[in-house]
Length: 278
Length: 267
Image (cartoon, rainbow over all chains, first blue to last red; front, side, top):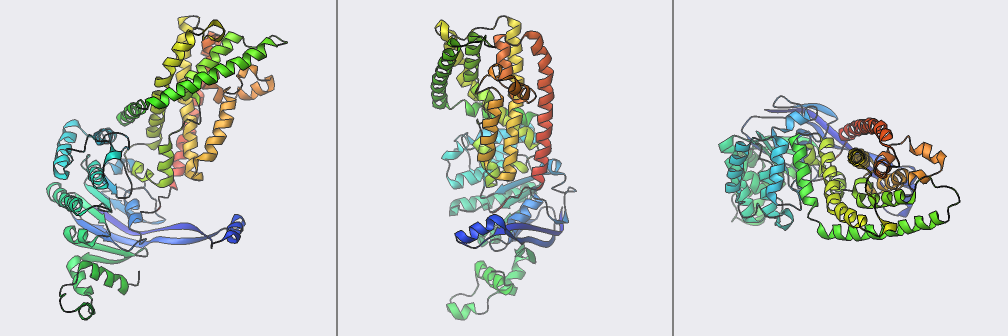
């Protein structure tokens, strides 16, 4: 369903040291450094999978999502998703995907949520009965009944995020990209979002690619994880295998014998250390 | 197409809710209208030569300018779109199965229409009943009124196409201030918003006449007052269409270029 092979992308970043002198200097000569955000990333994802895409801050997770959703054009490499190349067949391709960027908003700030939903319905050309049944399912499972007629600016972050997720699924996409969907949510909202992700994956067979820093999300949702660091792919495989491989040996002696199973966060930290990407 | 209609409707409904902004706008526009008319009255009373446009025609010109301000002002802007470009929320726009040009065009058009709908009727209504010296005259016949409506809306379409270029330039400059100021000051001068075009020296008129800006404001207003005859108006409407097509073509091409090299940073 998704085949990514050899994707590379670098950004040009202007650099200067602090102070007025270097600011003046940079007026005449500006130094750029190439930052390799992605370096020869390749993987394959089958239909119906939930994949956790993890890595430390600045590893290139969001960049990969943006390439896969057709927003960024990579420097090199190919990407085929459902037979499309995202950045070339953008308009035809994006009908099939839903995207949630946890740090951005797609809802109109000043109007009730339902107005944004109806706009999306028309943008995607969703049939009325399909829209109605999707909306009903989303309102029930994400518990939106009371907030759907409220203007977005009056919603809390958790309420808004649930609406954002609903907005990305109104057109029944077969792939869902979630870029930090649980950022800033409280425990109840987090559980609701996780529950929902499992539901749509099981019931509708939606393929889900999820980036997050919350390892509990990964543990609750994903069987498979892909780890990247400094733009390179480091690990691709089963979560349990990872757990066995990277169980920190020194943890027991350090923290006392009361801990026998290391938490997933410990494992990730250990792994980051091993790969020297922190 | 349905998407464009839908965003148009939503933006229109959204824009109509800003009542106090409209009231404040109306007050400002009356103030401006009166001041400008008084200035011209003073000039006209001392005129040594026969002026190229009569005072009642000029007063009509001023009132139309004031009532359709949001149709013709280039500085009238959608900050949401600028923010979208500079803070990266454009990411979402890019995952929609619709062309961004058409989508934004519909949005901007609706915004201007909503604002004009709230403001133009009160101003027009009052201006028609003002004392003789300040009064907005009615168009001479129905054909003139119809021609005015056609040219005004074509002018609006051209103006939105021009303003799209400001938004597209933000992809490169990352700041709206420069293009807004340049387009605003130069564009409005060339559209006859500062000095009505008939009062400009002839060398300037010959420059202004080859540019699209005057087709957005000066042209429909002079059609209304009868300063441009009906036949002349019919000759100039195709020119409006040509400019409209050219500006949309340029905008779409530039936007395609800009989107190829867009960088959405962070998060």
